[in-house]
Length: 261
Image (tube, rainbow, N blue to C red; front, side, top):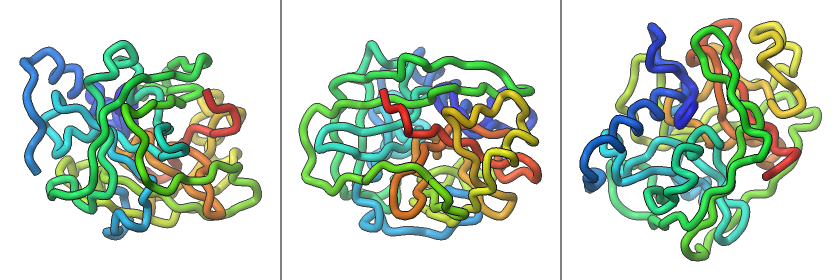
């Protein structure tokens, strides 16, 4: 996503994560407005209690989504949240425009807790290239320091190793044509290995900083950027980019966590 990259606004079908960037940019050009009061492809509804460390990254100026949500993130310390760099890079000098909401099954509902963001640190190796019409983020990692510590479990970080399946979760859309899901969903996804993504994306896929996951039956989609890829119960990657959502021959690509910023 380049603020949200998995699907570019200019393509025939929005591409997983950049749609949010364009929309957030449009929102930032308008007067500030409060967020509304109140997806995973192939997934099922999940309770937020299953992922107490999962946060919805948003901004009150992104009023097209409940809670201003445009990405996800994973709590790795009492005041540290990992997310995708393309989600927050435009706001690294304006962290006060960001917040993180925890513990909400449906973003359109109430409950949970929302915490302001104090600072944004983007991986020093972050850069962008192109694959067809998609923005390809490299070293797509960022750390958000929260304005206060939260009393929540943190997620353990680890390599996918030899795992053949993983689990993804997020409040994103359930297909390329769905822009309205706000319910937390999760799904089991295959980990087909680096060769599958090299066949799909050629040199745009770099196994040194990317992980390959997903299939036409289960994948992450728009507004899922920054959310978790879990393998063997540990956080092995963050939703980053892909060519569309759940398209045959184009698995999802996740930021590898071996070199955190």
